[in-house]
Length: 337
Image (cartoon, rainbow, N blue to C red; front, side, top):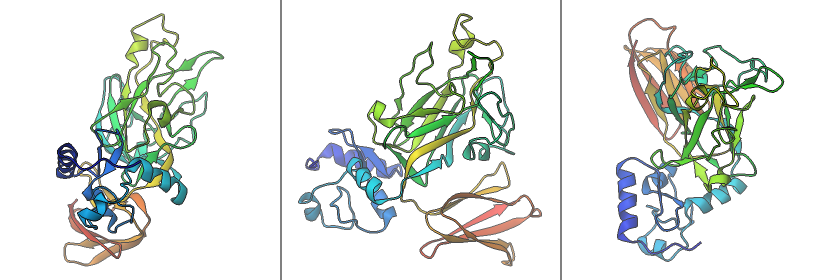
């Protein structure tokens, strides 16, 4: 697909996205997702494809090249890059609803929604362990996403949302449904259609998880998933096929991307002030070090690619310096315990 010439609207959309720290924006003509200058800078080098906002090439070269936007880039990535299955690795927002609070506290959350699916749950037995399950509650909402990758449209289902649904008779399922929406930038959302009686198209209905195909809603790639509990459509209608007076709202086990490709991002260290955890985002193999306030090395480990968590709970109270080195970057974080 050939790109239309740059115009004021495209430049405005790009500049606004960069100002907000976003790596993509939606092209107003094609509806495709386009990489911003920031995304190219995070990549570090020119890929040679003549991308619209490439900062490494002269503007004249860009205008005379075929501009490869993200929708086409993803097709090439699926061929050349490794496509893996990966659980969502970050929580953007969480607004609990009413009812259950299981697994919501800082002791277990958000780690309990990054691991899974549960090894205990079966199609007839739910898992209530707060280390594995987080109750969203009636009317609650959570936005999960990917920092280390993008979920792309591949063959068949692209997302698997695992709740705590289970069968409790030959014809009954204990279903606590959620509406599923996806987004490339966390701003513009597209919802999967669902039926309020059969609950087809909802998460939280099928024991073992409900799958979703991005092709159904015409989306090439996403980074964010929003789950909103809609159990009220059942408990307010005693004639509903899934009616059960004991329903307490959606219980999240895990969101799995079934077709995930790596995405460029910078290494970061983030202190969770409500717990003893430090989040480590590493785009490449790195060295993670912990020093006391005097500069004495306490521990040092090799860190794998992706998102991991450093638990400082075993350290005595005090100030610590944490560094993350990967040969290209050095990130430093001071924490107080």
